[in-house]
Image 1: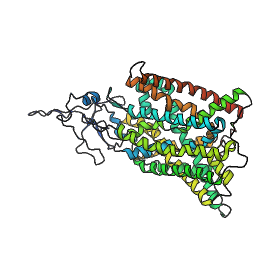
Image 2: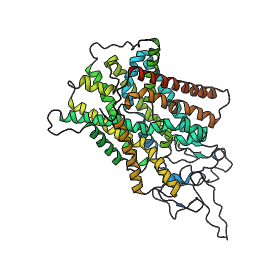
Image 3: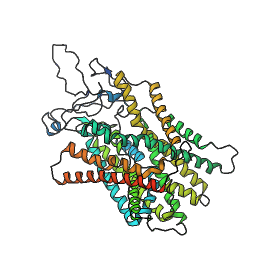
Image 4: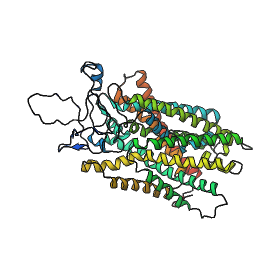
Length: 523
């Protein structure tokens, strides 16, 4: 059943005969999942049967009268019919399809801004003022363009499919073998690897918050570093029991607000406190010209890593209803524009103000957050320092949920496809706890993971900047040698070449500078 998909055809009533109930999914005007409930009935041939009454949580299904949208109209011909995977109604990403532009903005903002932005001034120390701002601007515009491509690739009028997961679109475009080789690992890392990094940063922020609030006045023995990791992970696992992507919209809203808050607090405090004595803006130069080039490429990798979240765009759009008159890409793009306006208002001031305040003195490990406590921990209000740490903790907990959702979805899909029924609540609890504590084990085992921001940016860059361009050419088939064709091929090939250079440069920098490999010794 996992690979079967069913079409939605209008049933033609026949008088005087009791025809058997045909398998149905949705009327022709609908592009969303067969049901919003967790228990649609399956027949023996894996088709979804109509329930006795519409679940309260389902999106109203309205037939478009033929005199308004004739069967032969251009819209109907373009949309054809929608084929739906009957499993979608039971999986966390597509279980609920009642999202809207506001939910999309919350999720996109929560996934698009985070702790990776705090190391942007580090990239400026190698690029300098001019090239730092130019590179950051070009990267922002480029990734916004690929976001636009992904939003419009979610629904395919040619095949009648909704691609509700990034890997699903890669499989349909490149084939399963190529998708596994080139897309599976970066997508898995952007899910599990980001959750591991969030545990590391969130736990360190918990320790900072405790030290700021208690200081030398508390008689309580503070937890060890490993215990902070466990406390943060347990809170994340508890919050992860919310059933599906739409149900965490409020969590994403809180995460987005706190992310904006700590980004703003950090750069405002840095500007108010003024530049550090002896600050220098001369780009850091390596011992040789080769090292200098590799340092620049590593800086580009740091900037690329700041623009993550593309692997979640199709999943976020999958939570929306869609029909002929109201396709999902309209509210989704509206939400993306709102979210990335706020992202720009955070990233650019953080990078520019951070470099202005600290120059070459910006710490490589932790970036602006480390600089705030290292340089202004004594002369800044303890309330503001504690509030900043608390915002980082809450934002990390919220981001963990949205980045973990694809992993939850994958684990539950194994059960759903085998048993042809929704996973029970106790199994869902086990899956999510297992994922959370596996991430905890990895975070404790490799607490230096955050030091590889440039390398990670190079590995995941194609997901953000290259693959969407290739998928657009493959799916939309623009005119060969036309402007659109040249633009996407050029961006795609340049993105792949840049990814290879960034990976090589980051590996060289890590080997040349050295990294303190403190396995099972969280800082």
